[in-house]
Amino acid sequence: MELIKSRLLSEGSVWHIGSLSAVYLSQGLSGGTLFALTTYLVSIGASVKDISLLLSITMIPWTLKIFLGPIIDSFTLNRFGRRRFWILISQVAMMLAVMPLVFIEVSEVNFLLICLLTAHNAFVAVSDISVDALAADSLNADQMANANGFMWGSKTLGRGIGMALATSIFFSYGVNEGFLILIILMSTAFIFPLFSEELGYKAGQQNESYKNRLTLGELIAGVSASMFNRSAFAAMIFMLFANIGYGIFDVIYNEFYIEELGWSGEEIGYLRPFGMWLGGLIGLSAGLLTIYFQKRSLLLLFITGQGLVFLAASTFDPSTPTWMTSMAIIGVDAVDAGWSVLIFSILMALCTTNTSATNFGIFMGFGNISMLIGNNIAPYILGAGDYSFAFVFAALSLIPCWLTGYYLTRS
Image (cartoon, rainbow, N blue to C red; front, side, top):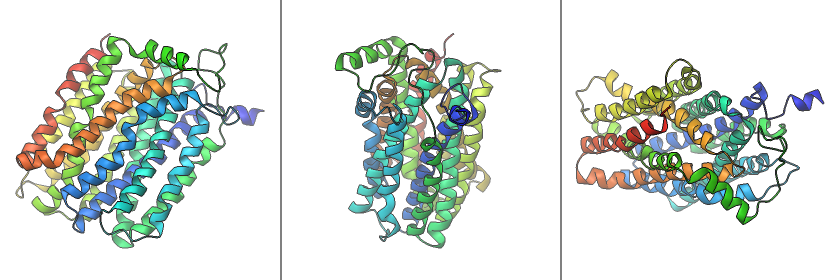
């Protein structure tokens, strides 16, 4: 009994936080591998339009999280746990979706590659919304900022590990071997949710057990209770603009650094993980920093920092010192992790009902639509001006986040 209790997802225990972080680590490994793949493809001839197409289509499942939430909230098998059921099946499906990439040749952006990565991302999105709902259900309000730090920190560290490993393997051995390593690493992280036990009720509501299914009326009532207020509206505005600049950056930075600044794909692939690892450390500490600093000050600092990174990139040319161009690649992920941890803790605190997956899915749906917008408009922004104009546009897109972030962190 004590062994089972030690694996219970509650009270912010080491196993509890570790299990949530392990699933986020798995998602990060997947994202890092995709980052490395885009860099590899650009280095062998893929264009900005190719990368925009790849990222835009594979991003679509993330924008559908708004619709995934009601399904995850409304159906489960209690034998596996209300949220854990979805985490387990999505983790297995994530690995199966990329299994063909261990065997087929990948040398360009084509229909098959896009289909496989889109299917993979669909299951990563299910895993993401399920673990977010699990965190919102199993954590007390005073544990969320710290737990989010560990979760997002693990995801960002995973991105760095995934990109560093995949870069090394892609350029030295091939894409097939890189995806084989990804599957092995994800299967290791799968052990944590597999052997966990989930609460049968929302944290702090011991007298109200979960139902296997929610009626449409219960679903609507739960969403209305959390979402129809000024704070939720401000949060949706924040998320709608939050990732436009990042989406633009991801599409154009490889070609900019390779074609304009003279870097190699390997140099980019080996350097960017350092920013992800730094972001992981910032994410891990962001929750703790709120003990000593106002959440408003930290959030606005990180948003401002990301804007400054984009503005700095707009001034780069071949004569710019390498240390300065390197700092931009490192800084973009470091500051992104900082504000992400803080805003996610705010969003989770707004998910106060048993429809946590739906509520959080709505918020994250807006964030993913933001990324999709950035990925899609990047070639047009670049066509309307130059790289400098595109980076300035990315910086200006953060202004609504600064304003709504100020409102969301009011006392």
